[in-house]
Image (cartoon, rainbow, N blue to C red; front, top):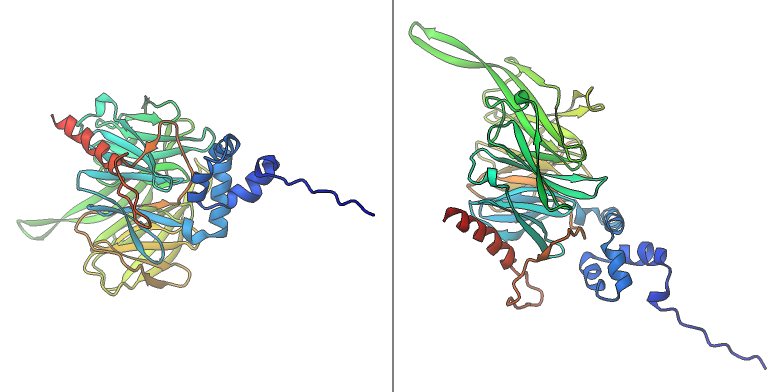
Length: 408
């Protein structure tokens, strides 16, 4: 008579690390992965590793690209998440708070003298202050960067004299100073009112140079006419702390419209220049990409598309682009729409609300990224309400407290 052997059960703790990491944990939704950190020390260690965070992001963005190909926008009174189908309110805002940038799921916010690196997906944030030399200095321009080799988030703060910058390193939790050539940011050319855009973890600042010609209609009556435009960008490399200037793109008077407008954006991980005439009856948009290796790159004209926004008024602003299908996102006073450059199909994003404030927009993807020193964005006294979004009151209080202390 054959003797039945009892099969030994294999527990999760006995599974090989490779199976746990690649076949089980990487497939978890972010909310579940955060909860599973409490299962045991091994799972806490695996899920907290930078390598696992990248693997989790890669797997989930491949399997479910629409849920990870998002935009985050500052609409003056609120911070929102934009998908191709809807707008979702993320955080109540005021006109003293600003969105600095978004990389790998971490969102950088700024108010007064206080900065915050916030991961909305895991409800954790870290607050820190600008260095003393930047307190209350007008014209300070901030940019967010990520060092892919050192796995480090960095915040760049240009000084008011445009001759140096302070760089915050999240790994060291400290600021350092970087000097650059005096003519890198000429005050007459540097667009300090325009937030920098981000491509592959590097912030870029816009430089523009306009050439005008004085003309006379009749004796004693003169006017200035825009005849040439030179556009370029300044890139900050977070790995070597260097600022570099791109080649200029040049337009002459025959190419410039009545209301010439331009915007640099991140489109499919490439520096893309978008140009259009605001007051033209048909809003025709031209796109140019910066191709080639650094130091020998050139501007290449890619395509021309036509915007067809049913509710658009006189002015349309070009904001950013979704990554996977290369849709260009634009808005009229905060009412968002997107267009696929290959088919020129215009799609209205449902639920978007209008705003009278300037809109700043960056790419966003929910991730598990965590940096040392992060805390819960919620107060301990906040109650949990099932199926209801909780306002991150500790984060809001931290940003506002910094501004109040600076004022006093």
